[in-house]
Every structure is written in structure tokens, then in C-alpha cells.
Amino acid sequence: MIIPIKPWLDLANGKTFPGEGSRVSAVRSGLVLSRDMDLDELIAERVLSGDLFGFESNDRMEFYHEPILAQEILEAMQPVAGKQIFDGTLGGGGHAELLLQNGAHVIGCDQDRDAIDHAQLRLAAYEDAFLPVRGNFRDMDRILADLGIGTVDGILLDLGVSSRQLDNPERGFSFREDGPLDMRMDDRAGLTAAELVNTWEEKELIRIFREYGEEPRAARVAREIVKSREVKSIQTTFELSEIVGRVIPKVSAKNPATKVFQAIRIAVNAELEVLEVALEKAVSLLAPKGVLAVITFHSLEDRIVKRFMHRRSSPYVDRPEWSAPRANPEFCFHLPSRKALAPDEAETKRNSRSRSAKLRVAIKA
Ligand SMILES: C[S@@+](CC[C@H](N)C(=O)[O-])C[C@H]1O[C@@H](n2cnc3c(N)ncnc32)[C@H](O)[C@@H]1O
Image (cartoon, rainbow, N blue to C red; front, side, top):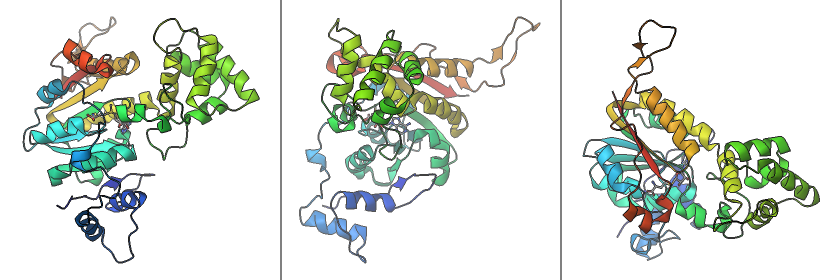
């Protein structure tokens, strides 16, 4: 059995390195390439000798992330043969696999190296129909241009972090287990959560706790963080959660640090900024009748998507000072529904992480 590992593209600092990615990930996985050994030869050799070099084989593949609103995504994207879909949040490759199974070609983008490695192996059987790319979906225009693709038939964004990222204490996203305060989805990015809490000015901390966490005690939490870091720098998720717990009492099953952690994660990954940029770029990257599908997990994200889709789906705009409505120069989408779709009870029972999910769909005019 030969597991095909296709080259993937690694978009770092605006550069594209076709083919380098698989070499890098193979080396990271403990493989040493001799100077004149081709990567394919090496893979064949190792696989034949039964050594899967640290990657999980398909039958040993552990749980990564359950795709949310799967049926609704299939209905919205109609992923038939001949369609090309950009999945900007590949994650465990769950949605991508559903699209591939139905015949579409998928360009799967994720900024997380682990997600790319995992999906590359999981979806290897789809061969050329699947192309993994490490990058930020904010750069979707450049990613597609580098691949020689002008427009696509669908763009999928399933925002936020995957279960795998959340559950791995080493990534520092969760207060449930102790780990380094990191929270970067892309480990090449400069700012970690530890740097943010230890160096940002108090007023900036207050701003993000208010804006991104909607935390009513933002000022008190920021003060407590500044007081604590003057004594000792804050380095772990448990330390931060304990500091927040000093000023926010626990009144329900919810951890008092939930909103503060959300705010820091959004700031570290610039999540709202990249979403706004990506939505605007999606307009010119979608072919006529192309589908934009976005799954959000909190009201800040959903508000951005909702406003964008409503603004760009009104054929006319009106203002009190005008005598009649005028054509909307930004009009480019039809909305199958102005309301967001949510998971049904069966899904929220099966997968508690789907509880806050909302799907919005827009079809290019
Ligand atoms: C909710 S998971 C996606 C799960 C995936 N749909 C599945 O079915 O397995 C979100 C993924 O998107 C990635 N991600 C989030 N923001 C991103 C961005 N701006 N650019 C690229 N990847 C991003 C995260 O690293 C994470 O792996």
C-alpha cells in the first residue's frame, strides 16, 4: 500500500513553496531525507517497511473534529462533479470530505500545520481532487491566484477553533487543562496569549475584554491582570483562569474566565479582522451562482456576516434625502434565507459544540 502524499503549499511571508511542505512535515515527523533521496521514494520505502513515520494511518485516525451542520452545508453547496470549492477552514477535513465524496474538487486551507498534516493523510485517497494549502483564508485571493484559479463555485468558512485545538492543552486555548498561554492557530504568528496578557496596556486589555468578550467586568479583570503581572509574569492557562476567578465569582457551571479567554483568542488570531477582509475578497472570487457559506459560533462573528450579506443582497438602497431608491452598487448576492440556520436538537445533543453554531448562505448573482 502506498499512501500518496501530495506536495502542499506553505504560504509564509507572502511566498509560496510548492512541494516544500511535505518535505518539511516529513522531516518534522522524524524523517531524515538523504541528499539525493526523493521524498516519494522515501515514503514508499517507509510505508513498505510498515513505518508510517508518526502520521496516523486512516484506520488508526483518531477523532479530530465533528463537522457541524453537515447536511445543511451539502444542500447549500451542491458539491457535484466539476465544481471547485475553497474550504478556508479545513480543520479535521470533515466538511471537505463530504464535499469530495459528492464529487467536488476541494482546495483545503488552514493556518494550522497539524490540521494540514491530518487532513492530507485523511483525504489522500481523493488524490488530485483535494489540494491542501497552509495559509490564512484572509489571503484566499493570493492562494487561488498562485494555483492559477480565477474563480471558484463555493467558499466555505467554518470559523473558530477545532475540537482538536481546543482539547490539546499544549495549544493553550482552554482553561479546562493547564498549558502554556499560547492560543495561536498558526504557530508562525508572532503574538501569543502570554505576550498579550503580559505586555498590552491596561486600556487595551479592557477594550478587548469588552469588545471581543462582551465581559461586563472588563476593567476589574484588566486591573487584576496588571497587578498580578507586576509580581510575576502570567504564563499558563490555569494562572490566568485563577486571576480572572479572583474578580468574577463562579455563579454557574460556566467557567468565569470563558469570556476573557474568548476575547484573548480573538485578539491573538485577529479573528474579526480576517473575517471582514475574507468576506470582501469572496465577492470577486466566486463564479456566478457560486455559494458563500459561513458557520459562526458567537454573536460578534455572526453580526459581521449578517451585515455583510444583507448589505450586499439588497438590489436597491434608499435614504430619506433621496426622492426614490437607487440601485445598490454593492449588490452581488441572493440570499436563500435572510435568517441563519441553526443545528437541530439531535445535533446539539450529539455534539454540544454545535450549540452556538449559525450558518449563513449567500449565492452570487
Ligand atoms: C471549526 S474548525 C473547522 C473544522 C472543519 N470544517 C471540519 O469539518 O473538520 C476551524 C479550523 O479553521 C482554522 N482557521 C481558523 N481561522 C483561520 C484562518 N483565518 N485561516 C486559515 N485557517 C483558519 C483553524 O485552524 C481550525 O483548524
